Length: 461
Ligand code: F0G
Image (tube, rainbow, N blue to C red; front, side):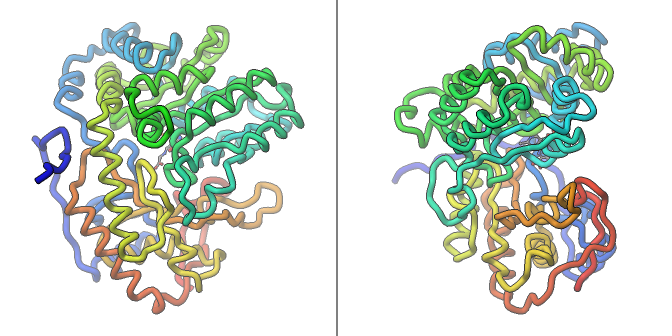
């Protein structure tokens, strides 16, 4: 009999789960104004709100936490991180930041200033905080993801790819004067944790070089992206994950990274550069917003844990178990006929709420509704990636209806096991079986002007 592949680690420390009844959850979600962000974590049984900062660190990472020294400047752990950034990512200059959006803040403040209404930033479905940082400075994020990404049923190995024709048209139309950078998110969170191929990245690089525009990666899930390249892209099967990572980064002029994902730390971010001059300019804002340039809002110990995390997340066996667990959940849901974004992404399963609840109009937030129903059913907390997240149009103030209305079930790294995946699938199957009895969605009782999904208050219609 063939031995199944198993996780390349065992569990040494556990965190208890609080169980609850449906009645408890009815009360809690009402008190939370039907916003899953307002729940307390002990009101949740399986927490799939995010894979960000929720992973389990290894014993080596915890050892680095103990070894990290807490010097304000030049801590030994900073130099460990510098070595890892140089060795694994191939970047000479970097700044630590307290998380990914902080790196975005430093970069966009340096490149855009406070008010840059004529600036355009093309990319593949920018993440919401990235979009927030761009729009906050009155610039425009331009989504040039390939059209295939928006059909959840279509089989395509690299749904994170950019449409090179549309990118080239944007580069022609706006030019380097109006495009400070092209931003490629690997894997692309907003389109379903979908990877970008090396071939596509090389194409983007070529276009950027031809038009004299910088190319940055949003590298939060760079290792998962490299895993997909190794397992899906022709000619890459025999290359190591590390080699692929090096090539991905070698194509970029810089990167932002939320280290809370593939850095497998609970807090941290990075901003990397090839250009020393841009690095110097960003140092000023890093000091103002984050902290001195060798700690950037983190404790010395965090830097050591991150250095180790970058090494662990680029191990093939780890990635195989990690991406395999997410795929297992996705396949189970598909077997149960539940509509999911296909193929399954690296960090999450995205349930297609438009197909799950076709009778609920987008104006009633069907993905949010599905998230609340799954919580009531099984105490599983996902997150809406749909109309609430898309925010209103900054000019017309109308709801923006995205092509996809998704419930994201993000799997934390090294936290849950296969039995948890079965539990999630059973919970969702029960909602699926009673989907016709779910009649109405939500209205908005209160919302913030930007990034409203975090704090929105909803009422049942
Ligand atoms: N870029 C991407 C692609 C992300 O997914 C995130 C965060 C960020 C940037 C911002 O990083 O949270 O460290 O400030 N994504 C989390 C998520 C929050 O749930 O997908 P951060």
